[in-house]
Amino acid sequence: MTDLAPISFSPWEMFLNAGPVVRCVMILLAVASLLTWTIFIAKSVELLRVRVKLTKAEKALEEANTLDMGEEWTRGTSSIAHTLVMAAETERKRSQDIPDDSEGLKERVVLHLERLEAAEGRRLMRGTGVLATIGATSPFIGLFGTVWGIMTSFTGI
Image (cartoon, rainbow, N blue to C red; front, side):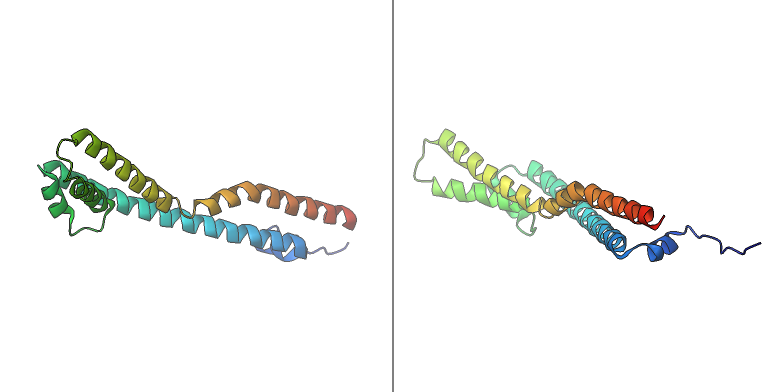
């Protein structure tokens, strides 16, 4: 009777017994996973902070009767709300020499605010391109490692 050592199927043992290519694939996937979770947590915290700031600013602006009061109440904050109020105030000051152009003023303010909103959206989307790249390539990298490991197993038989 021969004594055979028991085969261990723990993840660490399988990693150590894998070939160098499969090990590299596993390390690459682990790093991609870590990066994905890091971006996910950072973006979640960032969006939560923005949501809280915007909720506070929205309440303050709803209570403001004039643009000047809104600017005064959001002055101490570093939120996008203060930036938007300042943009409207700037546009109003630029248009003081046109007294009967209230509709044109509204249009210019809306255009300015839309540009600022788009810029803030782009800023909040930073980092998501990495997530898209990882999400698109990881299945193929994992499949490559699996196929390589199976080919190595077949050649060992």
